[in-house]
Length: 127
Image 1 (cartoon, rainbow, N blue to C red):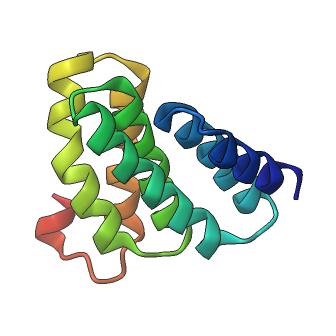
Image 2: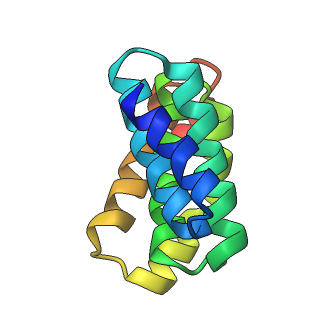
């Protein structure tokens, strides 16, 4: 409730879009930790969308938001959505951050986990 109040206050006070996205990202983590996975995922989607509009796809914050959103999707077992998002964003991360960047590696690992856990994945998908 404190973070929800902070978000409302920052909005009323006219905080920058970037600051509001930061507060939303923190709130989404709290929702996740409380087991409110749908709310967490919805907020992560909003943060990713906001970062994309504010900074474009070739921005570290946008890539981090995409990764966090994909994590929330996999926790909800929405593997197709997670795979689609990561399939789009991993090449961007590889190009912008490099092959050995922790975030790039995290996105690639998450993509492999989404493939592995998806009961509809074919052998060709897994290969």
